[in-house]
Amino acid sequence: MKPRERISPMIDQARRLARRDDDQPIDAERIERDMILLAFIITSTGQTKLAPLLDRLERELAEYRLERDPLSRAQRILTSQMQPTGLVREGGNK
Image (cartoon, rainbow, N blue to C red; front, side, top):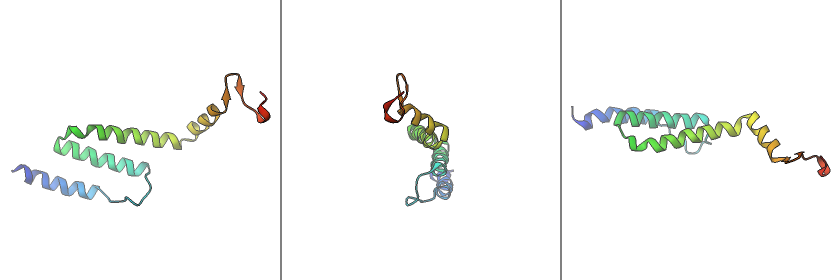
């Protein structure tokens, strides 16, 4: 089987996985779907040069989840209001 014959069905499968949603907001589902597509491309073609892009998508997904985690958000709010001696209260008193 020629390389092009071997890759062609993989490209068709990748196209089915790839859904154009440029007009939609970026969310965890979209990042995960892109990671799956990229993982498919890397494993089916052996293009390990794409690994940094996969790394970036993994970081983006982790950051996206961290920003939406209520506990992390609450921690950031408290941290931003802390002084070395304790919490800042209304009027600047401790």
